[in-house]
Image (cartoon, rainbow, N blue to C red; front, side):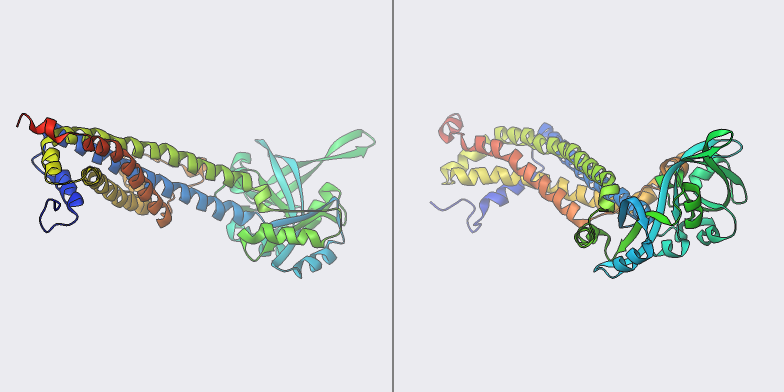
Amino acid sequence: MNPPGGSIRNYAPFIGLRYSFSRKRNRFTSVIAMVSMLGMVLGVASLITVLSVMNGFGGELRGRILSLVPHGYVSYADGVSGWQALSATLRQSPGVTAVSPYITAKVLLASPTNLRGAVLTAIDPALEKTVSRIPDAMVEGSLESLDEAGFNVVLGASLARILRVQPGDWVDVTVPRLTVTPMGVFPRSKRLLVTGLFEVGAQPDAYQAYVSLATGQKLLGQRDRVDGLQVRTEDLFAAPAIMSALSASLPAGYTVSDWSQSQGSLFRAVKMEKLMVSLLLLSVVAVAAFNIVSTLVMSVAEKRRDIAVLRTMGARAGGIMLIFIAHGLGLATVGISAGALLGTALGLNISRVTAFVETIFGVKLFDPSVYFISELPSDLQWPDVGAVVLASLLLSLLATLYPAWRATRIAPAEVLRYE
């Protein structure tokens, strides 16, 4: 016997979609179907929006922290003497574009009103601008002021606020070195003139301080040595491979590292947070998808007579199953499509939305002095949207299988006996 529907070959999707959007359904079933679709809309939209915000935060971290951090480091346990020759050798290595010396130590900075632990880094200002973007991050003064006469220091803006100093003020630095005098042994300290402030909008603003290479060698007793060399590569994400190749070409005793070792844990944590948040929000989508089970179970009970008629007209069990799979996917597709559109709109305009909320309620959601950002960052990536849509469709498909299978178990004779 020919399938029902006359000239309609694929009758199952046609009938399933008719069931999904028919106005002649039971009122309670219609309410449950609407709730399922709204749950899908909210779940998909929330997931896309949150993924966009997580991508935005990751981009902010890369743009701010990695702009301050060199791509790689080459150091020696006892310090590098004659670093100029090593620098010339490194610059000739494949993938290396710039090299700059550094000395670093943890120190204590004190102002007349406050004190704070900090990381003091001695640099060559002329070479530093080739390996990092500190000169571009200066908000007051300049990095070149470190080479001027005297003992000068450039502070992170947040560190300066904590110490309550500004360019032109003095700070006392105490370094982890001892000075032996006739009066006894004392920690080595020196008064430094604040000549500039930098701000990258990240944690280094609160602990980083810079002095010239000559000042650092005098303070830390390094004489003509440096702790190591900072390296900039052609590509930030190729730095691990480039530094690994560089390590093989250097004599024994040198330690080679890259940004993924010094800062990689932070980015791995962000990646893990993105994964966990995605799984949590995907559970919201899963709940909405499995609400479709309730809708389809009630639809199967409501359409028992239709199923029996179709079976007596020659419809096979597979056709009946496809009808209710199409029925469930029709409801899910509407919710997923609306959620994807809403999530995309929010992902592209979340900063405007937060600004509107701040204006309406007169509050500041993100205080730059606390969060280092003034607005919610967002980076909508289409692969994320596609992954969310596909995962939601897969969950919806799984949710339709059991009710659709139950529909195939209905015996036409039992249903039509009392008709």
